[in-house]
Length: 163
Image (cartoon, rainbow, N blue to C red):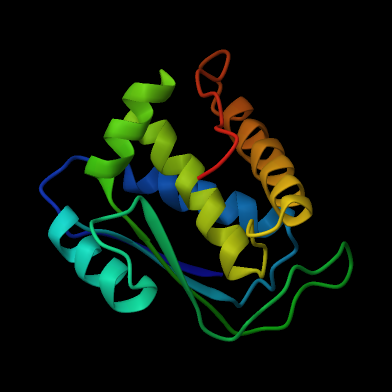
């Protein structure tokens, strides 16, 4: 599995932990071991350009996902197809504001957004209530399982009901 995590900002981000979180999420969802993913951390100006261009919405956002080969989750014993999962783009300053409002760290918010982004790349969505419930339940389970593996005590994060 090839996962590139790039910080294109001056903000300090634990890229190794984002990498581990993405790998954990992909492993849990039985993504093919040869699948490729890129996670980019960008500033608000760059995120705003992407948000306007691809979503026709003003201002920066927290996370955007750009699927490539439209891979879907696999199952135990039968991983997804091999291919390029796609790109996740994170904005740490938007994440910092959300983290402060939710009462957890910016890094934990970036982890939540990484899980959220991987789920979008695998076809999950939250446009409809039933889809939203499924996606956010899975997101919460994956994130809390990942955080529990950290070994630093109880997870401090409270995954929001929406993102």
